[in-house]
Length: 143
Image 1: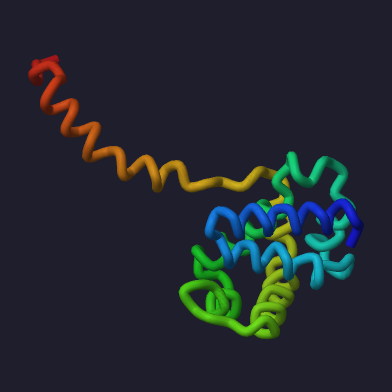
Image 2 (image 1 turned 90 degrees about the horizontal axis):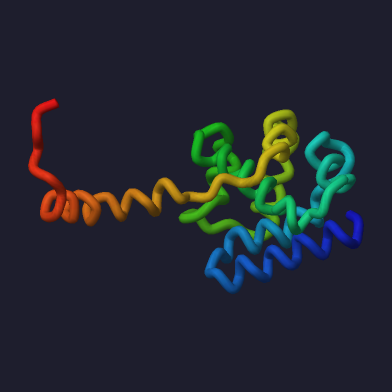
């Protein structure tokens, strides 16, 4: 892996550690060890034409893997994702296999920045907004 890409994945791992995202940090440290040009995903990451940090490259790939888990598309990967515990070798094997099985999808996932969970966090605000609207909003009026 190129030095710039490798440094980016490590920097992202450190940020994840600071933010309490230890599993994503673990993935960010594992991916440089297993990515190669045998898959379109690996080749694309290794030959990334832009600025990996500004482009959130590591999070794009981690997000693509997480999306496979959330969609129930890869049982082997799901088995090593939290809340399950996995040895370093089991995680390595599962991630490598998932990249090979879902290469086209993961490569395409690199096209866009990762979707964070604003919707999920915003849902927690809804009860408060409804209370404010009920207590301060205009009375319901016919249209």
